[in-house]
Amino acid sequence: MLKQRSSETLGLIFACLFAAFSTSAWASGSTKDVNGRFVNRYADLSHSQNFLSWQWTRIVEGLPKPAKIPTPQMPVDETRLKLPRGDAQVTWIGHSSLLYQIDGKNFLFDPVYAEYASPVPPLGPKRAQPPGIPFESLPHIDAVFISHNHYDHLDLDTVRRLAQQPGGSPKFYVPLGLDAWFVDNVPGSRVAGDAPNVIAMDWDESQTLPGKSQPMTIHFLAVQHWAARSPFDRNKTLWGSWAIEHPRFRFWFAGDLAYSPDIDDIARAYGGFDLAAIPIGVYEPRWFMKRAHVDPHEAIEVYKKVRAKKALGIHWGTFDGLSDESLDQPPEAFEHARQAAHLPAEDFVLFRIGETRSYNATPSNDQALKK
Ligand SMILES: [Zn+2]
Image 1: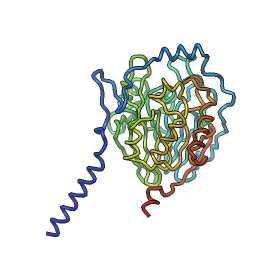
Image 2: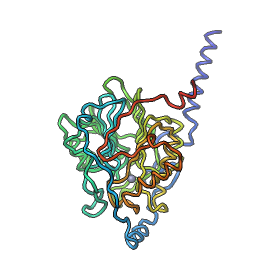
Image 3: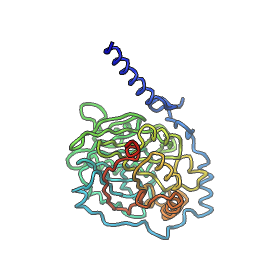
Image 4: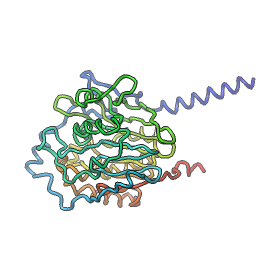
């Protein structure tokens, strides 16, 4: 009898667990349309809407205007990169490129060292300031995480150089479909066999990575955006955000994203990050950008929704001409949004390019509430 009851209890627990993980409106993983293009869960970004009319307006209006204030920059502390402090350490290289150091491992997110974030340099958005960590000063990189294939997030020369780093290629974690691009473009790419160095992941897929003391789990998570490197490959590869869950510290790299119900899904399944990297720039004009990029106000809403304890703003101040606002406008607009939201300055910060900050895990609000 006792045995039967305990098995019933066990069954009930499993049923509850299953229910908890299956309450989302979507099934796990990505889907494609009839043309083989990945689709967003809550919006149709299969076509560019009014791209030419946006380009025409910005030419007529002469946008973006030159920045009056350069993005703050500081020399990187190379000693600190070699001896990271705290539970996790982050260095802003510029735009969305970050060095993230956790439990003896060095990870790069969306590393771009190019002068131009463009398929046709010297046309297109130009780098306004040098990368915050010179390429030669990078520590040995264990893994690289790519959010999507836009030129300001994935640079061919940078990933080729990383694949050739002394001591061997890092592991490249990429959205579905980008593995084929690596094989075609990056010498040494291995997607199969015993030791692949390019690992393509679908939304809601997880993998385990070794840390120096404990393993960590990485998740690739859906956000609303799109992908393309040419006029002919729109959404042929996937896009997304990365959660790096170490037992001591949980980090979310938002990638590029619009404000969408995907954020609620992430909050429900993974919310309560110790740190989140969230875009605050490349948002004007809103009528064109809103479907794919948050503005500073929405970035703060994202931060609140995913219940991150701390955040840093990325995707700003580096490549001039990605959008209509000047390079110095996002920090100003962000400051207004932050004050309007009564958010303490130390909770959501903007780094200087080259700046390093260290973080220690603190008990989450959720945990504090349960006590
Ligand atoms: Zn993008």
